[in-house]
Amino acid sequence: MREPFFYDITLRDGNQSLKKPWQLNEKCYIFERLHELNVQAVEVGFPASSHMDFEACKTLADMAWNNLIISALARTVQKDIDAVVESISHAQIPRVHTFLTLSPFHMKYVLNREPQYCAKKAIEAVKYANDKIKKINKNAQIQFSVEHFGDCSQNLDFVIDTLKEITKAGADVINLPNTVERTRPAVFIEMVKKVKKALGDNVIISLHNHNDLGMATATTVEGYFAGAGQLECCLNGLGERAGNTDFAQVAVALHNNGVKVPVNLDKIYEISLIISQMSKTPIYEKAPLIGPEALAHRSGIHQDGAIKTKDMEFGAYRPIKPSLIGRKDDEKIGFTSQSGKSAVYEIINNAGYPVTIDEAVRLTPIVKEISEQKGELGTNEILKVYFDEILNVKGAFELVSFKHTSGDEFKLEFKFKGEYKTAAGCGNGPLDACLDALKNAGFPRKLSHYKQYALDEDKMGSGATAMSVINLIGKKGEEIIGRAIDQNTAKANVKAIFNALNQVYK
Ligand code: KIV
Ligand code: ZN
Image (cartoon, rainbow, N blue to C red; front, side, top):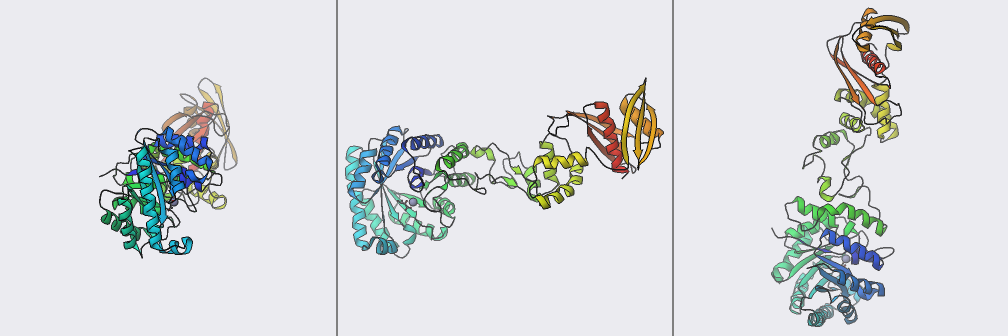
């Protein structure tokens, strides 16, 4: 399948929509980022619009890397075309990009001109640009844009006839903008196909879609599959009104559909953050791919699928592996009343505290209830419940003290349903001795498993860095896990036994 050709318009269409258009040094910085992305063409500005933009076009043409097309915008007037030629013709491959509307509405109500007048003006401008720049640089190219092409369904035959003349006059690329997104993707693409068929394969068809109804990516992606060679995109979807076609969305959508995309996708995320800062245009929370929430899961079903597939190339609830676009952050699991046990399990384990899925099931209704009032819970709020419910289980037993008396003997003091009890026990270490004391007090329990975990760090300020885990056999032969942390490991073991007992004796 042919490779798409990415024509970046961040420095022109993106720039012209900013509250404070970029200065020369800012344009240079972004240009370098575009180099990192490896775009195939950059529209560096509109040199006739200001002295600053003229200088920027000139400088960026100097900075162009090998085989990059440097394009600059001009209305179909000689002074604009002269400004483009003067500012960029020294580039390896300069391109004059001139445009005029051929839409019936725009010609009548904005330009107050007859169609034939507009057609003639466009053809003459292309001829002028072609003669002028190709004399200076034989690699030069001409691009003509039918501004408001999306509004040309009624006079498409006239547009096609004019474009035939325009290509004869020297245009190498015909750009078909959906200048204001009024035409839906399928209808727009049918129009593009008609133009492509009429002009043949010697002319490159380009798409430039604005995003007024949020369908620009769809139109551009489908336009590529319908035969468009050049795709005009803007970083972070900047541009007039609701912006232009978003670069990242198009590149990733094509990649996901098996197209070899000739850009460095792994640069996208970092550059998007830079562009957001430099344009003072925050990335909205739900922005596809790059939004802070674009990889967040809050529903229990989605969290379960996301967790089960998190290390896989294809994820249950994500369009890409975050690393594809250079995102380092994982899929975010945010706990709310809509969330479930998998999230509890994941959040606690990720915080460095071991928990089993059965324990997570026990905690889930408690944290859900808290979240009903508070909304999304932070990790520490979930850990607090874990501390209260798992590391400090309330029940019939209450530990008062456990002391070494002599040799292998220990004394256990505790309350059972409020009644003070004391018992001595001995054994091979404090854990054994505690179980022995409990047996002597009338509460025999078998130990099936014992483990100590090192905790990554003491996150909850308890001072403990290790956790004791003991498994006792319950009344019906089931395993009961008791966990506890303490600076003193013997005490942690005893507390863990009591935390297990309290699950049996409520
Ligand atoms: O949106 C548009 O039609 C344009 C043209 C100048 C290509 O930006
Ligand atoms: Zn535009």
